[in-house]
Image 1 (cartoon, helix red, strand yellow):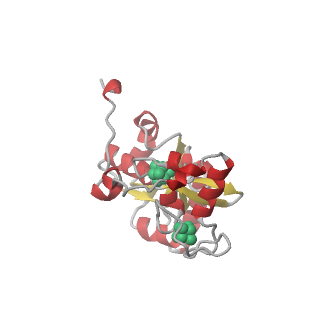
Image 2 (cartoon, rainbow, N blue to C red; image 1 turned 90 degrees about the vertical axis):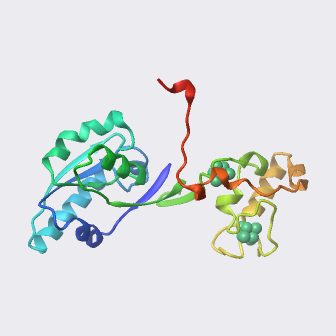
Image 3 (cartoon, rainbow, N blue to C red; image 1 turned 60 degrees about the vertical axis):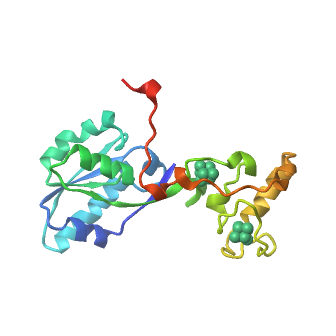
Length: 222
Ligand code: SF4
Ligand code: SF4
């Protein structure tokens, strides 16, 4: 899932303070699961903003709404009436959701209430970790299902770097060396032979550096 976290209330206040009415719009998918932008957080942020604006003497009128997905036109329309009623929108969607809302409602300011962080998983209660950098050309199959791009601090496709200490990464001593994990995993599944292969430089054309990416599925186009 996409993992995000809430911006601090003073930062949000600074962003929205010029408005008299504001729709705080939650998203019911990834950011709900990572406890950043779902219905519950809409309620918490709205209450905090009401209090902060009262203290600042501005009394912003705040409406609350959560839709299933802000990145999907099918659901975006469900927010249309509420958006019409308000001067601006504070989106608690991920960066894609915020931009989808802004594109659809071109005459309304749409602000990001979250900082979108990464693609990851819930590791344990209250801890999310990054697992995928969306490189666009997945090599997990060569590395026992452990991503060297995201999880090795040096992004080594031919590792390890030799700096690890007792299975800890030399760059990030708080985490296990990804290459130790790759070795263990390949050993467990009987694929250690894969480590004998020298992997050539990755083609990064599929990654973000050349600008935003587009996937076209001709079989789904109308
Ligand atoms: S290889 Fe690329 S697509 Fe696969 S998990 Fe790593 S970053 Fe994500
Ligand atoms: S110690 Fe391991 S995870 Fe850290 S940079 Fe070196 S190979 Fe990568």
